[in-house]
Image 1 (tube, rainbow, N blue to C red):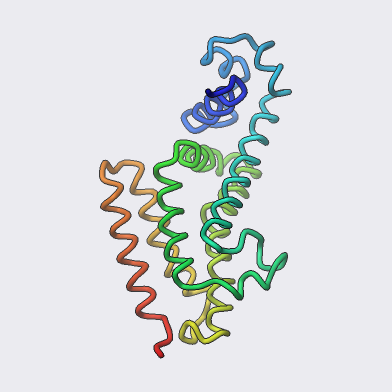
Image 2 (cartoon, rainbow, N blue to C red; image 1 turned 90 degrees about the vertical axis):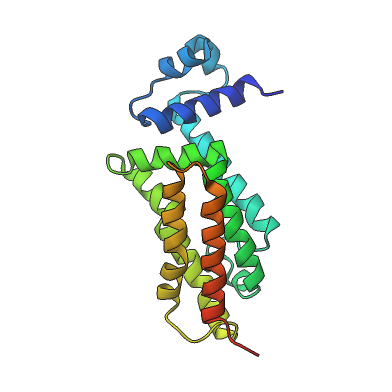
Length: 205
């Protein structure tokens, strides 16, 4: 059964995604839930505490998913050895899972929408948007592809360019999903892209 603390977190994130973090007050969150501000403060110190709990939840989910699909959960500089072990199949499965997560999971979808709304008026949100949705994933894939090239798994190429070519269609399809009623079709398009990318860049033999 969902707890009051969890209801507060999910309701706040939904409101942040709809109206923006800055526009939503603790009173608004409490009112949406039909509870008093005092009752809310029993679970969270303030709106900032709710926000930090949301970011922490996202970090925990990312770690669990990375471990499940056997891809690095840390940045390259923190654990370079983990980037040497990644297989093409891991990337293929992880990327499809990431697409489903960002487009089908309410928590992830609302988190992305919140960052999208706030990135132009809040420096911290802009950094989070970059880390989670744009530059972060590109840098992550660049580090993986560089190691794959060094190991002879991929053809020699600029790993940053490969990362952009690989990730850009996914970023586009995630954004298209916001107004699409057929997310499975979008996932099919992504899978075709991934397969063609592998065919074009993998070392044969």
